[in-house]
Length: 372
Length: 254
Image (cartoon, rainbow over all chains, first blue to last red; front, side, top):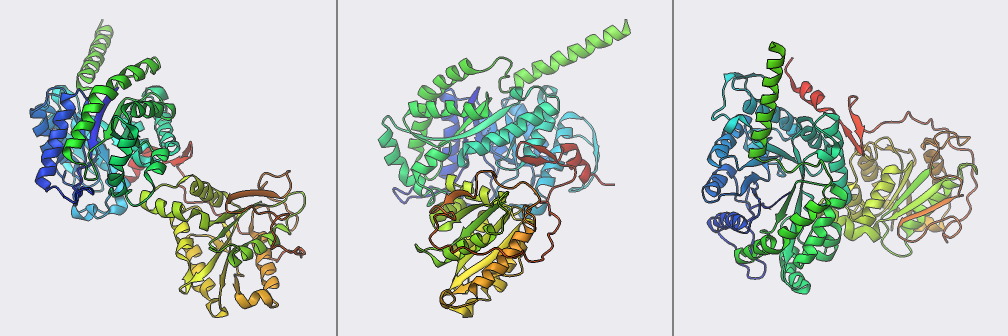
């Protein structure tokens, strides 16, 4: 099981001081957060892609390349990469380049984005959102797997004998997660390809998340990739911790109350009860996170949101320390104990290279048999 | 037959709720004893905070979720709003704004409103009917408006009865002999399920005078209108999914 953090990269005033960080400060804070994640032994750092204020991370591969150069073990990912408005050719090349520079320590998560206006900024039509996700990914999938691609589609000019460069490291394409909150088409897409499915359940009640994951698992088996239990599932989470539960609630409340997206809405108490948000002690975070398994089944990746709503960097780094030192070691052990036999680990580059080699050996053996 | 009343009345007691109860009783009175109507009342007043939160968070709280499901699963709807600033109230509109946009497709709906003056009665035709036409509901011809003065005048009972007859004729379990789909829980007498707000039932609601059940109006029942669903979709869990290969094939140039 992999644990990590995912950041949206919002530039939000700290409601307790009124101070707003500069974009430069926020970008530097994000990379400091990634380095801290590596330092405390987390597995994954994922950054969002946004093209509108108050968000700063418009260029994930640039940021992840910087982080790759300064880390040794961290898996670098996105949350999400816009498969709708980015040219699939550019995604293929950017992330293959990152894969080489990071020695395979990367994967990515596809999403459609949550801002309508972003479509025309990149010359696309929002009414085609799902169709763009379908066609663009189908092309991206081929660009990473076929050296020479001739292709014709609806949303971009045809490709004639095109080779995307660099070719994927060790001939193994980056692993892809498909992120969706509410579109069954995307769960279907992830299942069709045998890719991972990530549900960012941090704003959603468990019964909804459960339904989406069940859909993906059922279709994953339908397409012959394995049993429903073997499908590759990731979940979001959102935590704020202090030694004492009351201190956590008191300190986090102004950030919660003024947060982008859900601020000025439900109470902290309602939201904690209805969604995966946990505000309290590390023990409470452990308990609640373990309960995700009750509705999602055995899953492979857990990402936490810890750095939003204007929380100061110092506080965020303290949260990551607690995750790394107290929460994740227990979760690793407990999830491992509970995991059913036959449920795979989260895919890594090394494991995928080994699997590809095994398949190739099998194919060679077949050839020898047929030749003899 | 599952009938749901959506009332946007704010005061307690509320004349809007009263009108909703009168209309529901008039429909219930037509149901044959073998297939009694089950009535649920959704009081938007009790859901006001959850409706506002749904608008900002994108998901419903538990009580609102139950109310939205009740409306989506109803065989027929009675919707009643007070008139605010020459239209339905914002709370009333917000409830239908957070309802799934296909939830009312093909569903029989009776629209009604209350107001201080009869001069607002065209709210029914200029605001309510277009809203439910947009939602692809089947709105019955008679819409019922009750001004303050109507409660002490003749004529309201007749309008209620005519509208109730039109709605009854359109619901799946309706019709002159009560034949049609099995609706509601059945067997347990006139059902009383309360989604939000005070308990409703023909034996406890103080407002309801027994209404004789005349022959239903001769409105032909329309063919059921299915919600938007692609022919090649497969049903998995609660979702309609178009198989991926079909989605992709639809995009390929000819």
